[in-house]
Image 1 (tube, rainbow, N blue to C red):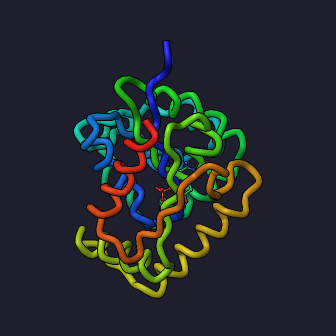
Image 2 (cartoon, rainbow, N blue to C red; image 1 turned 180 degrees about the vertical axis):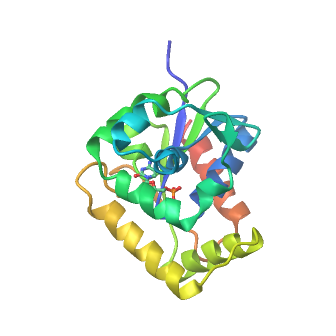
Length: 210
Ligand code: DC
């Protein structure tokens, strides 16, 4: 039997991948995998051996919430500090290997939209559609700033820009599964597009391919 179709959406931090991917999934009635959450969960769970933590993660995604060891960690997962730590841990090949099967298990009928850094290159190389979503550094910093402020967090735009840039450089420079477009990915720059416009573009490309 043919496996369920996958739409892979990769790109740098705060490029809008998460919002776009979850809306595309909702429009198609597909499952949704936010792979970054898994790396964030390993960071949050802590421990001296991240690869062991990754292999033994007790995690559940339910009703748009994330539970680690049965506790709701949806909000703590989003902090910048956890994002930075997740990016460090994500450079370890053993951690990536430990999370691979867990990510592929999300591929179920009728289909999956997956966002991250290596969805199209490593995790789902046979994805039906691969999108590399970018946005200017200024647009991305501004978006992340607004996200944090809207949630009542303290944020500093200059510090955020610096963090994003460092994180993307680390994600792109690592040896295993670096952040880069798959050879057959369609690049979309969302700097001057609304979320709806990006979602429509992705859906159009998907329909054209199917
Ligand atoms: O998408 P995000 O910002 O929540 O991801 C947090 C970190 O996890 C990111 O800086 C790099 C890492 N990551 C990864 O290496 N591969 C993925 N597929 C997703 C995230």
